[in-house]
Image 1 (cartoon, rainbow, N blue to C red):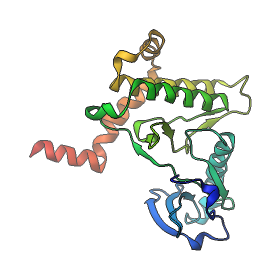
Image 2 (image 1 turned 120 degrees about the vertical axis):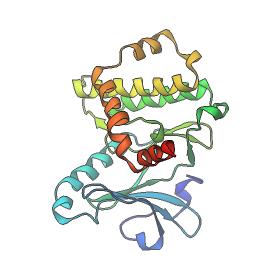
Image 3 (image 1 turned 60 degrees about the horizontal axis):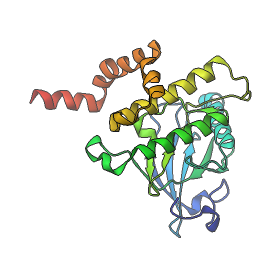
Length: 238
């Protein structure tokens, strides 16, 4: 956030109408949440995830489960640097979290805005997240931000995997943690390949087949069918 949220009126189920609502992302499916920026009169900003506008059958089933899972993840990460903090629950179908003053990672042409140390700090954030029993599960570039303080920030824990048995985690959690580490190492390699240690290079040399196959499917089959992919094809033909 741009200021300590304790200095502001905090949004909750009883006062949402006091905040301006600006849609950041409207749900694309019946089971997905709306993501809304809440703007207070004093300039404070918050982010709301809200499933309350979904059809009744989904609100009574999947939406409650999805909201509860994500709230549980933020509870595990409470007090941790580098992730949004949970502000309030909105019943069983939504919650409010803090606004992070951060920007997307720059292009490789502007890598001077980053440094190998940025990725060292990112590794520390990911390690602490794992030590708290949470694996992100979707650490692509758009979910890793650079804060105005220069520090890495993680967002969008909708598909996170958590465990209550951190000292004896199950196979799914261990695999999700490994995927997190591989992904952040691959992103580091795009910017600063010379900074890869032998251990990190070995991690990239041992990418699970299902991860490689999944990325191939998204890149070669799914991406060309999206609106952005269609625009690229039309541009290349012109």
